[in-house]
Image (cartoon, rainbow over all chains, first blue to last red):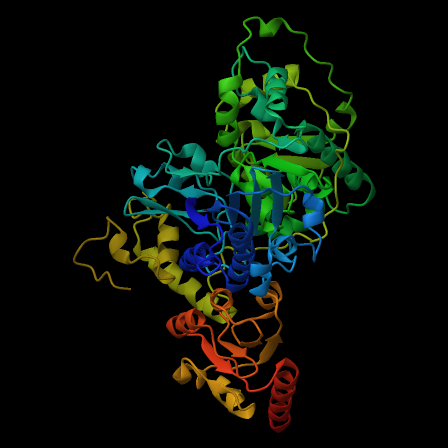
Length: 523
Length: 117
């Protein structure tokens, strides 16, 4: 993440445009696609001109993240008494000098909204106006696609290779003490984040949680509210969040249950194959799409709970706390609605911590009455933890789970309670949530997917099958020349992975520490 | 069609970056006097035709990578605008006639080129 602030002088129409111009240079440098640059710049320029025309002075703050850019333009000026009127095309209060220059046509604010993916305006008469908008980059337009949400902090890497060994898809390499993620292989399961002790791997940081406006709804993983120790029951955390100013705080548990019921119903009435795999965990769906394409038809065609939440919520402003990188990627890849923004659990935690008070006898509180939902759960096999998930999918692929009706797989231990971005032990937080949690969401329901699941190219060696076969035989040949120790010292998790790297030009045989030096190491 | 040939075709004078005009290809024309419309309608292969004659317009055009701006009625360009255009590589041309007739000429030239391929 990268933030920069530009100042804008009011009244100086001749010089205005400089902030947008510098913003544009930055977008170009990171390789954003031309269409997205264009949208961002039109919106930024309109906002900048508004400050120059109407206000005494202002600032433009630009925050660039992997998948999007957030822009906030704040001014000290007269403010807008009726923002909905100002949003109408053609409405303008611009002075004559601005109109003469071709501005003040009443198209500025609508133009910002039209060109951005998220737009908000706050204004206080006599103080000023704040326009914020975001452009979500088209993943196909970006030169380096943001296919996943695992963020690397190279300075923190100690070269321990722990991440290398836990990655279920062999998507990591550690070379020159820097973890590299092969994005086409990464499924966002966060196993590497869990294994990393130095914090070199994590989720891209989001900006601090803004003070919510009165119609802001907060959606968060149930596990989040059970993260503050035994003296702070989940209801207390929900209370603090409400006190922060969110109009509603909704844990996703009800949505997960709605999905479960829908998948069980689907398994009874429609599905032809067994077991039916629930799409509850986006990382598992990614894994199926890449490693187990023959099981794609077993995945029930619904949106994951977080995606469903996004789909259903109407016009109100929504803040979503993604529990893990896979949720974040799933939300960003479908393109967030303009009124939705995501934050990392740590950002919200930092905002909540100062307001928490510990209640010593929290355990004496009455456990909640769980709603009767256990009918469907009997038919559901729940498996969590990547190792068990892999073994279950292998069994399913081999036809050994034909007796199982519905299978719910979670990449993390104890489902989302085990996300490495949360701090409490997964078993403990799940227990606390189950006893004390609250906040049922009456809107919760499962939603059918419009876009079907599809196999990922993933491990394919070349787009052209003939060349891929050639590369495969070359890879076999190289692999035979390697010692087969799978020691990881070369930076690849296995000798087979190094062989692939060599054939695809990502490494050379000299990376292997075991091959005798006198052998010809050029391949 | 190159911007230079297009300028010749409508009898407009080239004021800045004449060398660039010979290499820039134009495939659409965006005519208007509102900056918002021009921002939305123009691309990197657009000639902007406008009565606006000021530096702010030149800067806006630069942001959306518009290669050329056509001023109207044989107008004398605003000195700051002229300077900004020559510095940032925008081709400034001046048509001797007004908006309606300039657009008519541009249409005729571009349509003929389409016919002859």
